[in-house]
Amino acid sequence: MASFVQDCVFCLIPSLLLLLLCLALRRPMVHRWTRQAVKAAAWTLWVFICLILELPLDVNTRSWTDEAGSPGTDVLSGSGRASDGPRLICKQTALAKYLLRHCGCLAWPRLALWPRGDPHIQTLSSMLCGQHGDSLQFTRDHLLLRDGGIIALDWGVERRRWEGRKEHQSGGKALGCFTTTPPVLLVIPQFWGGMTPHLKLLCHEAVLQGFYVVVFHARGTAGCPLTTARLTEFGDPADLEQAVVYVHSRHPSSALVAVSEGSGSGILLSYLGESGSSSYLKAAAAISPVLLGQLWFETAMPPVYRWGALFHRKMQLSRYESSFRGVLDVDRALSCSSLRAFEETLFCTSAQLQQRAPRPPPSSGSHSPQGLAPSVAWALGERAYPAKDWDGYWERNEPLRDADEVAVPVLCVCSRDDPVLPPASTLPLFLFQSNPYFLLALTDRGGHCGFALERGRTGDEELEEGNWSHIAILEYFRVVADFLKGEERDGSSCGGTSGEHSQAGQRSRSSHAAAPPRRRRATVTRRPRLQTPEQSAVDAEGGNFTWKRSYTR
Image (spheres, rainbow, N blue to C red):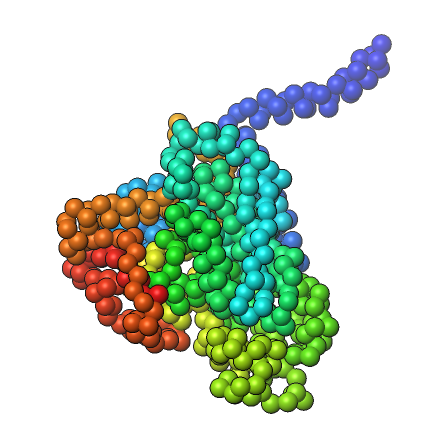
């Protein structure tokens, strides 16, 4: 009998221990200690994984602990204070003040902590994982370019679009929603092409808020056929310019805005600089943008991201390998182990085949090396011929080479822990502090195109799962539209006089021949020039800016 009782007690010991553990975990202190121990173990395992994959890990800013500052938004005036919430770094203008008052996303609750907030987890999940991708469909248009090339434009259509609009009607009204002329959102993917889940989520949210969504695909990317032996250079906006004109012709009464993802900012920022006040865009935004292209190509990237980007680029080139063998060294390009070497092999004569015949100068009447007709080569100018060397390539492709010509508000969303871009210390803060058209929303966490929001509750408010950059950009477009409409109304009521509230958005086009030619600029590190009265007027004391656009094309 005694042995039977002992056997029963022995069998019940695991159940009793489990019961005691459950009772212990109900105590707040034990539950907190257990949670911290599990997080510490997971953090240690993640550190080993990062060491194996050669992923950079900064324990000062990427910690598993819950220690963080309070969220907030600042207009930077030279201070280096870090905060957990996004900070708006810009010149103090009427638009900046209006954004701080009406753009609630700039005071959003803090971004996700570790593990969801880890920069590498956010970056990889934004490129590989996503939701709502199946509910969004795209219809494709192929646009024939003036040099014979083809680009693709994918128009997004939500299956339950009208139900989504009805659901969002109770919330904030987006730019142009529920009107006969909804706004058009032009989306520009990474420069290696393709739609990431992160970008699909943005398109899904924009369609639900009433936007027309169209995705720009460069020649030879995302299944777009390549009809010329010419690829798009990193900062060449010629194809995007023709796409913008086409989209505007499709919806001439709709406001046109654009957003880029990652390295896709190269052609967006270049387009804004080259088009100046003649752009059809009302506003633009860039998520994790490459602001300094040459520095980005020359900065060492973690192997996981470098090989991923190279894989996409080499797959595009290998698809048309036989067509390119006559104009460049395909074998050398496919054997490159860095993005710089690959880009230099494709577009710089100093890295291409040495036995090829010398190229005629651009002014000659012969065909260009890429098989372009003389008239097309003349229209393309210097881009009809490969750059002489690496530095010459960036003189014509640096995204911010014409930054002082930009005439529409541009919001750049960046993170300090971005593992794909150069360190945050290299950001051109002077540009945002001196140019009224550039605004920088800088966060401490977010990774590359990540910016996941923290789950749970804060006070009496429940935090919804989502992507902060998507919410911020769509709300930014709405607030900018409201601001420009207010400027237009105030300017009309003042009889067209100039001041802080001037006429904005009224398009009075003059002939292209009457406009003086613009001087090209190769760098943004110089002292900014004084802007003409037709473009802007800055009051040094009050920071008042006249948002008036003079169209010259």
